[in-house]
Length: 233
Image (cartoon, rainbow, N blue to C red; front, side, top):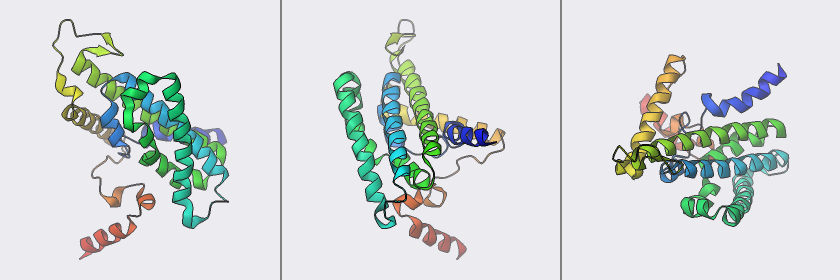
């Protein structure tokens, strides 16, 4: 029973609450860096490392950090791990660092990481926090890699820079541009919704504050109250 509970912490981020397709978080790097499959892997693994490490630190310090300054404290911890990851990527993977550009240091404000810190790591022991971080990180990496592979295949005729269709089908450059990213992302969300509906789960219907799982992090509770009051009137 206990093992099933721990497995649930890990698998939750893979499918049921996938941060990109189910919670619709982290869409900025998802759309920006997925012009190639390798970029998706690089961004996903970097975010996963930060997510796991920050979850561990925040879980260990959850009884020490004052509630009034928890968000600044979380961001400071996350920023420290992002700096370490960025230095490692610059030193050992310069091509990935160049491809990811500004989006690598912007992991600091990635809402997936801050949301898991606020909603899970700050309320749970270390082991569940590690499993939660791994599950969410792997789910994030999988979606980025899939999006990158689709866009690279259709837009350049290659996957991981290896020619697949480039020799006999003209690449559709639009898939390497922002409109192509939005199109592929929309199709994947639609597919996720269809599978969720088939499995009897609630699909992603709208993205307002009232449906956001991270509204406590960004301080939108007042907006939610106003929207609910307007609906009741």
